[in-house]
Length: 308
Image 1 (cartoon, rainbow, N blue to C red):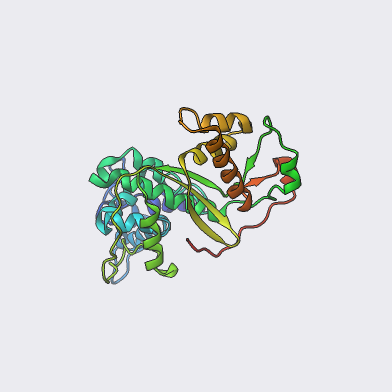
Image 2: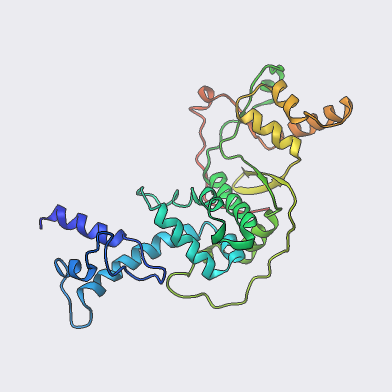
């Protein structure tokens, strides 16, 4: 076995998924005994067999990637409970292993993946999916680029057929539950340094967090970065539809028409709402210049965060 073969062999063994008890599998997918494979390139010592020595690396690899996902979803952990959350993350990582040198995107597919596995969250499935979506939107808003916002002079030149670009860090969510209350409660009660799952090694001992009770209710959120912080802002359904269509590249006139389609309001009420929506979005810098204009204006995101 040359060096390259050794590296590939150990990589395969270390990255092989753990059992549901967080132990190394006794055999491979092909039916080969892991203990026999380990003995070919790992020497035992007076305290550990070849299998046990390899298991240390196997478990530590998975503990690290599980922790990387867990630290991005503390509210989901709190709602599901440690045991159910551990099983969910392990199942997710079996189907969505790390494929990049960076762990940042490891949890990116979890909200969509969880939506297809209702049994993993039980009766709280819809609530859990909403929480996962919001917590990942937080990551995207935290890391997303910030482009030069439109100035008042830019707005003066817009017409009904004009299009607008939204800030890359702005995330728009249509949810079944007001889960911002839950996520904020967890983040406020959990020190940033402690937002890491201890699921795979040692159970955290402490009082259980009392979570707010939320009932099913259509909720629309804009998750965005302002200054150095990430905020969750509740918005009306029409504002959500308006911003979503603008983000998709529709003209201002088309976005407005679709946002108020079927809504029984007077022209005066509609005009007042539109004015409020654009005023709020403009004040927060959600509208920005076209891509070509912004290429040289990318601002590096900062690494501090606060919810409000």
